[in-house]
Image (tube, rainbow over all chains, first blue to last red; front, side):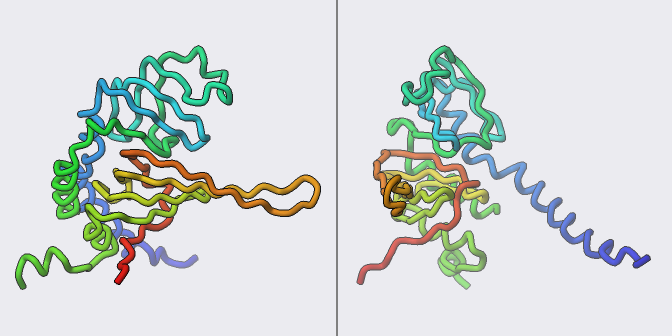
Length: 121
Length: 98
C-alpha cells in the first residue's frame, strides 16, 4: 500500500483554515451585523425557488438564516399554499435576494465596513 | 511603497472587486440572471449589497408548434438589493467608455 503521502500536505490547508478562523471571528460579520440593524423593518426575501415573501424581519443569525413575521407571498396566485403562513424561518442558503428598505441603507457606513472587512480578509 | 499604492494594488482577485466599491458593476448569476448596479458592500462569499439594481432574467421557451426557441428577457429595477454570494458566477468592474 502506498504510504500516506498526503499527510505532509494536509497540514498546510489546516493551517490555512486556522488562520482563516481567527480572522473570521473578528471580521466576516458585515452582513450579519447589517441585517441585525434591519430587525423590525419590512423586507422582501426572494428564494431560489422564485417564491418571494414580504414580512417584518424578526431575527437573523450568523448563517443569515432569517425569521419573518406578518408574512405574505408577493405572488399569492402562484403560491396559494403560503396564504396561511403568518411567520416563518428561512434557511439562509435558500435565499437568492433580499430587497432592502431604502431608508435602511446607509451607503457610507457600508463602504467603510466593507473596506475594513476587505483589509482583514 | 506608499499606502495609496497598497490600497490600489491588485494582488488577489477580491482586490478587483474592492476597487469597484461605489461603482456600477455587472454581476452574472446562476440560472440566467444578470444584475447591473452600484456596489455598496461585499464580503468574501461575494454576498453583496447593490443599489439602483437592474435585473435581467433570460428565459427560453419552446414554441409548441414550430419547436422554435423563444428567448425572453424580463427586466425590473430594485432600489436596494442584498444578493447572496452562492449564486454569483462572475463580477465585472464598470465598463470604461472612453
